[in-house]
View 1: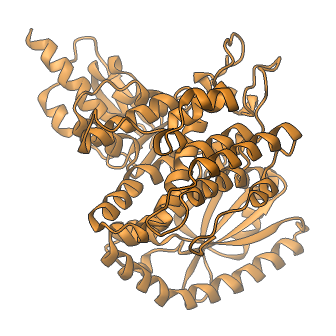
View 2: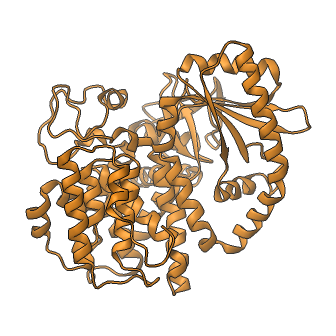
View 3: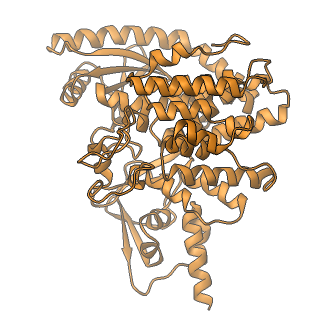
Length: 510
């Protein structure tokens, strides 16, 4: 739907909806027509009817399989703010659940806040609503995706750049933390040309120069992998190419001194199997045929990323002087990797089931993280807090008053490049890159951080300034007489750790 003045027809939305029950179809049809009439006189900067935006948001939501109430809210999400529709009208025509979703996505009133403070307070409101219902955040991300894809029509260059940078710094990382890799990549690649046009062109040119070589290597390796697996008796699988996003490549080039020859995953071969056991069998076959690159085997099936991502990555020398990344995963892991938390929102339950599952979020999935979920739930108006990731809850209840500090916390503690380290019991702790044992200790609990006297990484005593790396096992040594020092504050990388250290130092002066 790229043509100016084109509006996504209702039929397109209904065709991709997963829940085609009469009630769901009726709700979406009603929301589509209501929103179309409400936005009738409004135009976008492109000259398109404003309704083209909300119709596209509705389509994007339907495409990922979310429920009819969320699709309806996506279609209606700008009617209160931009079309003068009263909230009570939404409640009367579409129900309280849809109104809560619309209200969660709606920005702040126009007069109370301005500038950075307004942006910060809008984010606070968004996370507070998301803490009650994760679908609010998914609707907001789809809204942001379509707005970013149409940035070229925004006449104010300063505004275009600001929106693009917000997308890269906040909204794409949110999608990543929700495990929605497809959405993350779409957001990044739509925003990158507007946020950093010079860097975008430089990266794209490097990618273009390598494409012919990597395409040829991928094609040959794919044929060889298929033959090797078939000869070993593994015949039920499918393959696909994964092309690294331009922005993702830009970030990696920055960590590799802009030497593209050091990056092996510009193109990757995915091999998708019916079962996890097939993945491990295939790994052995592949390593029997090609020599793996040392240090480039990552088993995210045994140790999933905190956002739920599971796959085996191995990079192998292909015999032509180059190397290629191969990713192995099951079909269910592939769906999870593509759509993350949205893959658990396929169908919303009308009521709490006997097991306690709500809104189509899989009970088994939730209980991986919240063992007692569903044993004593009450209320029917929103997904219980236990269905929302912990980091959303933290952001919803962050009491940082200063807008700049709150934004810094978002970018440094939640949405920066991540490392995944382990406690001695095997629990995964998700930290920003360059985090130290001090940051690790405070991520566990402020009481652990305040009483830390030392740290062991992979069984060895280390300095508190040590930079943690993916896969490190970290043990914090505590002592009752220990207390934070000013030096800790300077060493710590996360705002969370700095905030607790600052409070402890202030308490010590009293």
